[in-house]
Amino acid sequence: MTTSIVKLSLVDDEKLMIQLLSQFLTSYDTIQIISKSYDGSEFIDFLNHTEVFPDVVLLDLKMKNVDGIETCQYLKTNHPGIKIISLSSYYQDSNLGYMVKSGVNAFLPKEISPTKLVEIIFEVHQKGFYFSIEQLDVLRNQISGKAQPPVLHSSESLSEREIEILKLICNQLSNNEISDKLFISVRTVEGHRNNLYLKTGTKNIAGLIIFAVKNKLIDLNDCPILQ
Image 1: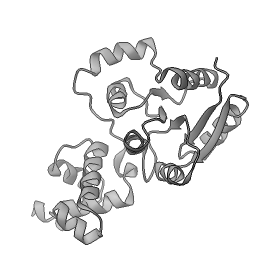
Image 2 (image 1 turned 135 degrees about the horizontal axis):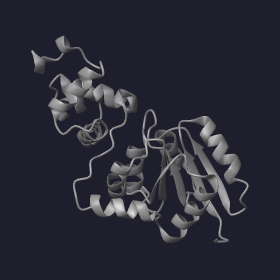
Image 3 (image 1 turned 60 degrees about the horizontal axis):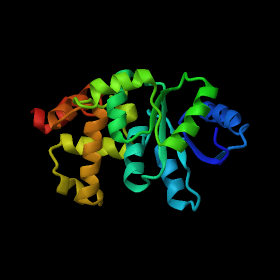
């Protein structure tokens, strides 16, 4: 095991999970926890103000506001040097290919043993990735195919801003109109729209409308496109 210190960030909306991880991981002299965040937006804010960046982040997948998928995309665009271990209770083999394509360096279930997690943290830090033999078998069947994004449960995975934009899309507003209405750039609107497709598992506006209706984010009578 390496003797160099791994600078680690924890991102999880379960405070107990962060507390238990922190207590266990700080018992290792070779691990330094430099931040604890309770959703992706807190972690991104930390990155925007810190001078010391983590080598590795333990990132939960399903969180309120900015979830793990969106945070992963942000990291790969803005901080590609930070290695990502997605540690999720929503772990499924069927999601593995998508998560790898999204840029994670390891994808693990939360039930993993603490000692095994430490081994993986150091392996990701040293080698840049960790995948078990079983995961590699799964990846051989997924990476070359059309891996589908994991659908996080209902509207709980959407931020307030995304829900706001979803409602405007359902009211037939264009990207430019949404940009003017919310005083944000068209590129930001496009980014939110793409995240909505990703999080809801839909591919078009019709799919977004069905999602919004099923999750009671809009009323059928308030949606011009359905009238």
